[in-house]
Image 1 (tube, rainbow over the protein chains, first blue to last red):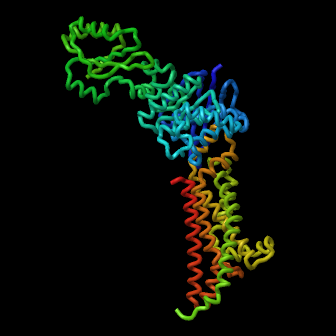
Image 2 (image 1 turned 180 degrees about the horizontal axis):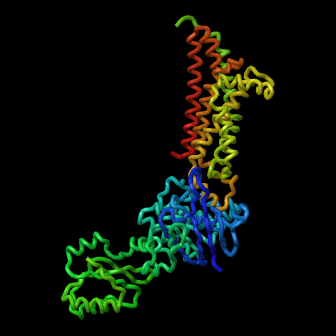
Image 3 (image 1 turned 45 degrees about the horizontal axis):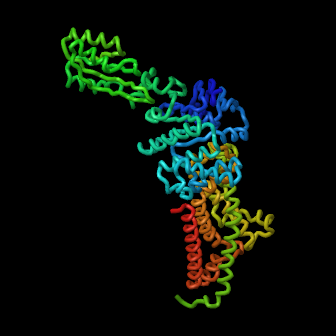
Length: 342
Length: 221
């Protein structure tokens, strides 16, 4: 049984005065299995924030079914929804910590709401502070913390009631690159050591690459592409996915770069797509050399994601035109090859 | 500066000072509480609020907007019939306290509303996300998060109330303002007027300082 199961979910926000209703979610099916990390990617306004808020019922669906832990949560009463929310942690881009409370008080809040006895609260908070590495900051005020520390408090607060599921809404977008890595490492531990399922919303593909097992791409309220991270990164299908993937995996030079490269290099340009370990680069290069073709790598790179290697290389091929033709045919038999016209 | 009767007026001065203090204390407490409730009502019924309700919000807004702009000296006269019913008299300190409490409630409700809307909606969402109910969120998140600005707002209200008590004399109420007008201004006794002025300024300074200090401690700045 999936931990989260959305079936044909729609969400329309009523019109603001003088405006038109906003269809934020237009028919989404999504399942999240227990133990996995799912990355939801999309531009602002794609509906990803709304989508996760349907999972913990901060927003209610217009139509469709949302099941969490096998329980249908659409149509539940507010009091029952509060129980559901207790079992789902959430962290936020701006951390959303209570400034009127200390670090300790922030982590205590969900436990107070859940009615956990003080003694148990103390033990739990102490454990969580150690887990996120903030034991020495227990009695600090939120304003005294750095961004990374604040998000670690946010994570501890979200985990306080031992939820099965953690929702992360752009949880690293307000952090610098180094702190982002720290927080991502902590989230990986949350998943690996505590077995907590994580749904992470982001517009940063780096977050998906280093954290998620599976990626879901959203555009205009719909899921347009989904799959294992390696598969989507190495072979994106939709234009929006390609744009996202191109932020971390070089595809081919754009028109301007291509013109500049052509000005500096003679010969034909081909883009070779390496996927997985099926074809080795050395085989491809050997084929080129066999035909007496000189080549130069002018654009691209090779990525390693979760143990798999892939990437796109653009080569400038130089030599006798007939030999280059033969070489390109030989290469085409090995890897997907695309001619980049001048 | 000519002759002054100040030396004989000290007992009346102290009585007036005491009247100002207790009129302001009672109205700040009662009006402050009413204003807090009214302000909370305005805040939670706003669009997107915890108890969002357009009709209720509209009614509260109209109510506050109707009474708040009335100049206090006219407000006293306008609510005099109600004062007779509620406190049994239309004149003197009880009538002033009645009018001032009402006026304070409407004024303070806006101060409260303005301070509550500055609470980051994100922290309210965070509280909702851990399953906190609405009443609990108001009690444990909204009010504590806005406490610092609220203390400053109530300090401001205190100063405004001291200002408003000055016209208490129109219905026979007392206080430092009345003392200054009756024994200073009308007797051409500048020393008496200025004694009352200095006392009022000193009172305001002390309360403002206390408010600032408390707010700073709450905000930890």
